[in-house]
Image (cartoon, rainbow, N blue to C red; front, side, top):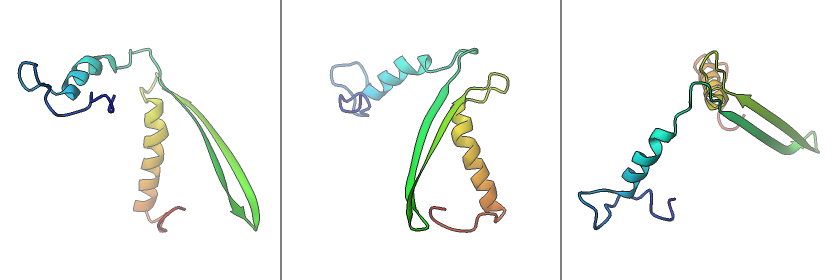
Length: 103
């Protein structure tokens, strides 16, 4: 969409007023981007970590499948991104994590 110009802020010539493509996209798509009360989102993720441990090559694969919790209303993306970020921030604030960089 970006390459086609749909996210441009430059008004389109020939349209009444100063209508930019991103405004049109927003008006058309935004109302359709809401979940229904019984609709779930799903996060499926595979992370592969490779490195050296004790002079040997190691590989660790972590798989995550997380869904929307209809009871609490928490979306899978909120749980998968928000929870770890909150936990890390709390650990930094309490000085449980004091190092810098990739830990």
